[in-house]
Structure formats: structure tokens, C-alpha cells
Image (cartoon, rainbow, N blue to C red; front, side, top):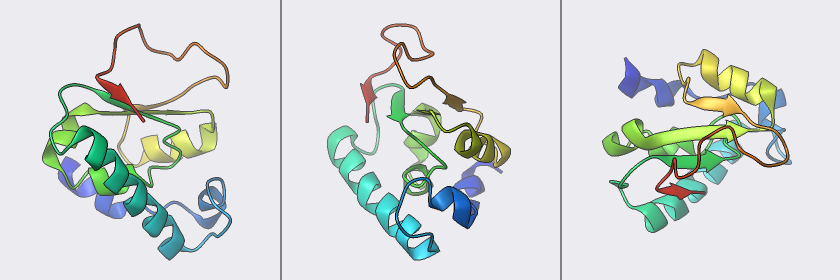
Length: 116
């Protein structure tokens, strides 16, 4: 089930290095938790529409947001790193897509209530 997906998010060490200087699981989780706290401060536990994680990578912020039921409906992600997005998709998150390093993003205008 969908609710359990984020609890199994820990990418392989090589993907963890795509977003940090250390490949440790503890570092990946710590950085994601801090990011999620900031996101929740801005958007709250019940965002009023789709929210884009621009630079979602392999889901280190998503790992923590998925604990919030409302975020399961509104989270969308994109990243320039196709390996990270493929890994995230393989874990059951088709809401993550690859984007180009330059605009435009692969979404219509006014698709999101917010972006982080």
C-alpha cells in the first residue's frame, strides 16, 4: 500500500551521493527531515493544491512528507537526474518526472499551489 511506500525509501549509496557529500543513510534522512520541516512551515500539513518538489531527486524530503496524509494527494516531483527519478518511480511514485535543466518545466502554467 501507498501509505507504506515512503517508509521504504532509502536509495542506494551512489544515488545518495547525487544530493550530498556523504552517502550514509543517517545523513540522507537527516537532510530530508530538515527540508520537510521547512516545507511544512511554509505549506502546512494540508496544502491547498498540488505542490511541486522541484529537485525531488530520490525523495529525501518526500520520505518525511509522506507521513502527512494530505501530502500523499498533492505531492509532485521533478528533477534533472534521470537515475534518481527512475529509482523513485520504481518505488511506486509515478508523480516524479524528469525535467530539463532549463525552463520550461513539463507542466502547464498554474499547475501548482506552490513550489519548493
